[in-house]
Length: 260
Image (cartoon, rainbow, N blue to C red):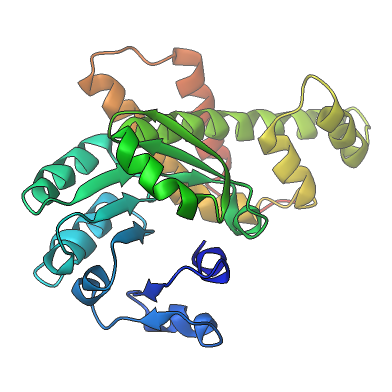
């Protein structure tokens, strides 16, 4: 994402908790800041990509955090997948500094970003999302504005809940096909063109049916499923039982050594 932004000639300042993460930008016009506050001071738009709620709050709210350095009128975009309530809490803190917050989790991975095909799910004031859109469009298509702050997170969590359920279905499908003496690769081609295809099945097929990558992603899938279920409980909405069972089945299947 950062590479696409700087390649489109936007002035770019970077900061990372592991400074080595910025080494790949030595051949670009990007400037590396020494602290989140310095990053904020250099930016009118900050795009944040870290793992969890606590990470987002730390980078933005600590004494030398982004909000401490950013001038009034700035916008912070949270690309991390976190709780909608965390975004709203941060927005309350930022409002006192006249800084706007947009939640805009993404889906698709680094390859999609390089091809300008990442999916951005945005929540926030329409004017703030529109202000960010030209930058988003350096790495994303489509950019979908889903409603008020937190809407992007809610939609991403639902997406990941469904994807987690689909992974188990895909694993079971290919195992079933193999037991029937069918060629998994041929079945995957059929699913890719047929009504039974899913993104999970396509990912498994592209990996040569090696589950190592999905097993590495299990902690993130578990995090997002847990958040989705907690959001539903807080809203007093009953989650679809079958979807929850399938997601739990997937997480159980991925809790072990890789298969191929």
